Length: 255
Image 1 (cartoon, rainbow, N blue to C red):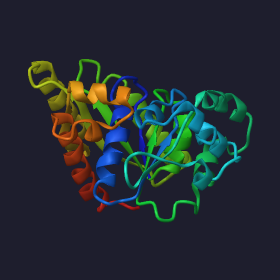
Image 2 (image 1 turned 60 degrees about the vertical axis):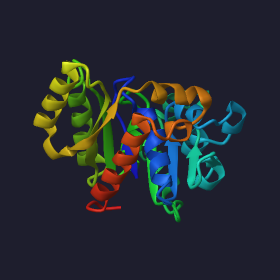
Image 3 (image 1 turned 45 degrees about the horizontal axis):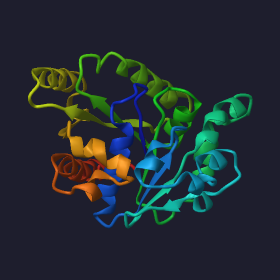
Image 4 (image 1 turned 135 degrees about the vertical axis):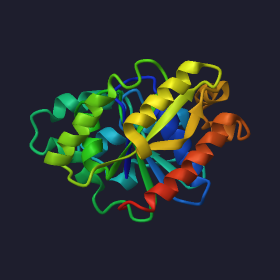
């Protein structure tokens, strides 16, 4: 189970969740996305209508639905999603006084994922209770990092949060990898940022980089992953390569 997290918005978390999941599903692995962002962009990006989200991550957290009840099929073979709706925004307030609030997602999923090869959790752009639940439930974190000037500025907060979660709630949590996104080969800044990130995180940074690509940006408005929208575009090919690299990396980690 992998949480896709970065408290900074607009770095490609949801895009990575959708398209990496699609690429993994294309290898005949059974994949589930858990949409933990109240904006519900992962649900929208997979073409799930608002009316189909009444059973979703909010009810899962509140103990009112099992993963099997909350999961919805998608147009992608082997890929299901536990969707998010606006009701999820109230979860942090409703759970704030509850005992064991950090473990709600982990407890809801325990023993309920038989037959699922990969679970990707799309986290909101904040280090609040929803992201904390994802980090406690997951065995690893994937961090999309945009190739821009301020890329490294906020990631130290995420690393500190991961360290605290490891110390207090989830001793097995690891940074699975850093994914460089929105890479523009025409821009020297992208090369500089990539070099800085690789210098800081070393082998944690994936070799695959996700290019800035208009087809990737267009796909969500059609309710499709870019791999269904335009398989041959550079963005689709990058996510296919990322899936292969992730599978190889995961084979060396605990399930």
